[in-house]
Length: 92
Image 1: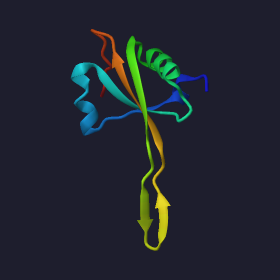
Image 2: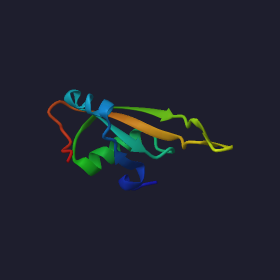
Image 3: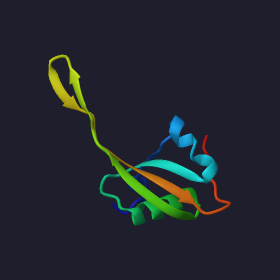
């Protein structure tokens, strides 16, 4: 897992994540095996910005029922990346 594209799955654009943007915080979906240092390096390499802080958390999959079968939504790891002052990621 050396490549930045393998670590950063996507930049998440949700209603809650857009509230973080004035504080220079962005929410990313990351690989489950990635640690904070790898996430920091990947974001700096992909978006050409300086990262101040990285907070990660795992969203646990929820139990769902489809007809008569039980199933589970997949677990995912997310990272809230805080950028240094004056830094910004251009989002389309």
